[in-house]
Length: 222
Image (cartoon, rainbow, N blue to C red):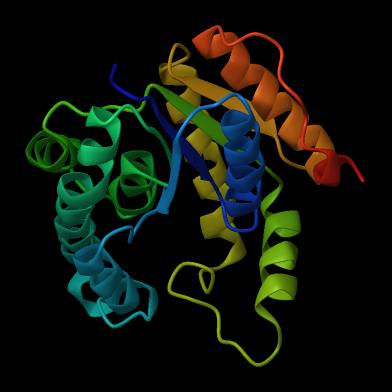
């Protein structure tokens, strides 16, 4: 039986990587094999592209150039990790996916929708997440979290360094994507404690896939 593909989306500091870990633990408790990955990255080739993008080295290429780099990384990621894992019956949890390219480079980068659609057609080859969890958070809170996580000695990455207006618009774009595809997307209020957010996510996943009641990760509730 083919595995399930769940993606996490949201602005900077929304807690995607933390919540992925909690969900992975819950699914593993149910006896499921879980693969946790991220974008850009997740495979050797994609991780190499990640370092180029997040360093800001590709910024001068513009939104179109960045979208092409993301797409190249995504092709390798899908071919090397995502598709083989799904074919083996594993559940794949991914920190960001194609919705981020739609948001960051497509809408905020003012790229033609037809270009984004063409890149998705070539890159995804029909692959779509079975469920996307949109972690919604006030960008002021998200950026404060990102700053605290990064520390004073580490520079902000390519997207963290954008201004407040960018991050506010980003939140609106993710909300619009979720509203346009309610069968696939669930919006999660990420402003609360990790435990409450984890509980909502576990409940949403169990409901979507008809898994029955699960256990909220105890350490998230403390």
